[in-house]
Picture 1 (cartoon, helix red, strand yellow):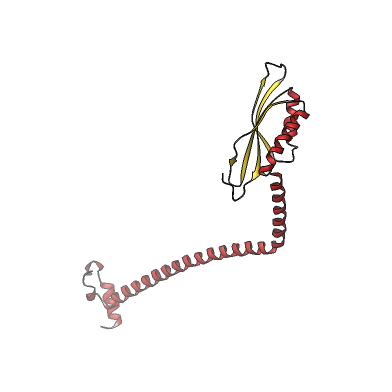
Picture 2 (tube, rainbow, N blue to C red):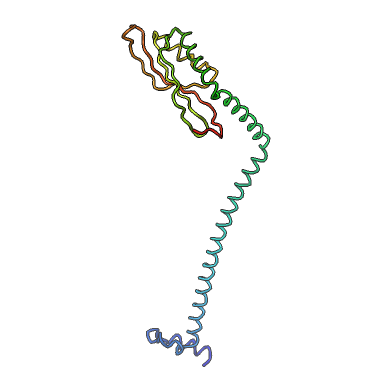
Length: 206
């Protein structure tokens, strides 16, 4: 059967008569068309699947490129500012040394008690009590709590508290309690907890 006869037979073919379980009995031209369509479908599907896989790889490479670019820019910036960082580090070390110098050593604590007493008397207060409490160890420093009880006029108490900030050592004030002194009205009685600090040495056994 030549090609024209096969085409004529294909035109006269009723698709309802095709046996889907016996494709081998189909006309040769029809089988060729089906195989061609199947080949094209497989080719197109394979192409898109391959391209999709390549797109995934491309996005991964682009993301890695962006990460590397950011890392490079960061390192380039750090390298360009290395001298400034070194100068800043030296300045920070100097400031840290100055702060550490403000922290009293263990032997300087009695001198601090004298300074507080002098500051109170200078502002017209009567220091009723000034006691060193148990030290409290922290990660890098040790707190030295000092309980203070003083009697004086309102403005004298305010001047004393302000004057504490002028001490050569770091002192913070906590737990204010002010009440009228019944024995010396209109004077006030103030209880306050002052805390100073010292640098914690490696051999501190607290």
